[in-house]
Image (tube, rainbow, N blue to C red; front, side, top):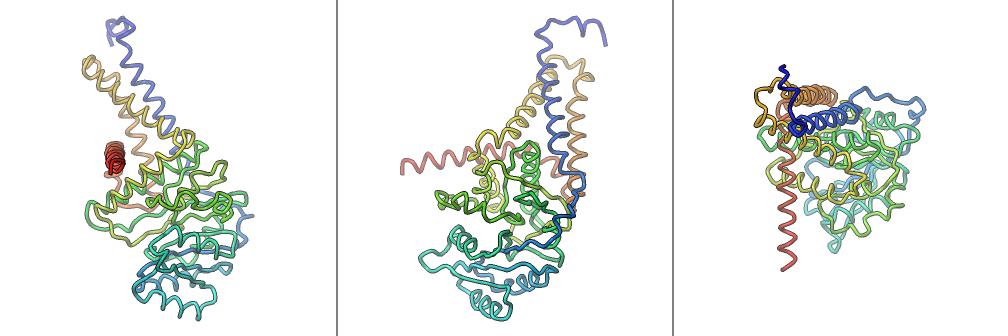
Amino acid sequence: MTQEFFSRPFYEWSGYLVLFLGFILSLVIQLVFYRRILPANGVSDSAKEERSISVLLNVRNESERIEQFLLSLLNQNYSNFEIVVVDDFSGDSTLSILGVMAQKYPKIKFSSLNQETRYSEKMAMNLAMKAAKNDWVLLLTPETRLDDPNYLSRMNDALGPDEQVLVSYVNYEAGVGRYNRLCRLERLSAFWQASASHSASAPLFFQQVNVLFNKQLYFSSGGFKGKMNAHYAGLELILNQLDGLKVKYYVSPETNLRQNYTTDKSEFEDLLRKHVRLFSGLNFSKKKLAVLELIAKVMVLVGLIGLLKTDLSYWYVFVPLPLIILFVHLFLVKSLLNRLAEKKIFLSSLMYVFVKPFLYLFQTTSIYLQLQRNKWN
C-alpha cells in the first residue's frame, strides 16, 4: 500500500467510512442478534409438569384428512389436553365425522359456524378460544403432519415457567417447483427475522401455527376487536400489539412442523403481502432491528459501488469487507438449516437474502396502488 493511498484528502475517505460503518453494523446485527437462536435450547426441569393445553383447530371441507389428523393428536403421549374444533360451514362430511369422533373420544369438543358467520377464520378462532377450558392454547391445522407422539410433551417441556409464549418452527413440506422453494424460503426468513427481533427485546410474530401461549393474552387484548377485516393474518395481529411479552423462540427438529399445503404463485404472493402488512402495522420499537439491518445493507452496497468506481486500484483493501459479511451470513444460515433439519435450500436461502427486499418493495408498492384505486371507487 503506497503513501499516496494515505495522503488523500479527507472527503475521499467518505466511501471507506460508509462501507466500514455498514460493515460493523452488519456484523453486530448478525453476530449479536441472528446468532442467538443457534445455540442449543435448554429445557428447565421445573417446566416439565404437564400444563393443561387446548389444541385449537379451525376446519373447512377437511373430510379426507380430519379423522387421521385427530387420531394422530389423540395418540400423543400427553394426558392433560383437549381438542377444540370449529367447523367453518363445511360443504362435505367434515361435521359428521367430527360428531362421530366426539362421541367416541371425550377429548374432542366441536362446534360450527352458521351460514351468517361462515367463512370467517377470526369468528371461528374467537369461538374456539371461548370454548377452550384450559389456560394454554396451541393452534394447529389439519394440513400439519404430526409424526412424533411426544410433540405436545416436548412443547410443554420447552416452555419455561415464567414464559408466556413459545414459538416453534413451521414450514411447508419440501416439494417440487420453484414456488414451493420460494414459499419455504419466505417462512424460514420470517421465522429467523422474528427470532432476531426477539433478541433485540422486540418480540415479533409472523406465524400463528405451532405457537403455544396463554389464552389470557387473547382476552386481555380484546381479541380481534377492530381487526375482523384484516383478512391477511390472524393471531399474529394480537400478539404483535402486546408489549413486554416473555417469549421463547425454540429451534429443535423435534418440535418443528411440516404442512402439506399447495404452494403456488398465489400462496407465495400471499406470504409476501402478509409480511408487508404485518410489518407496516408495527410501531418503530418492534421493527427497529429490521430498519437498522436495511440501513447497514444500503451502506455496504453504496460504499462498495462508490469505491469500485472511484478507487478500483485499491480493491484489495475494501472488497474483503463485504466478503466477510457474506461468509459470516453463510455460516449462520448453514447452522440454522442444520438446527431446523431443512435440506436443499442452502444456496437459494443465501440468494433470497438479496432478493427479498425488492420483493417486499414491489408488494408494498402494489398494496399502496391498490389502496389508492379503491379510494376513488
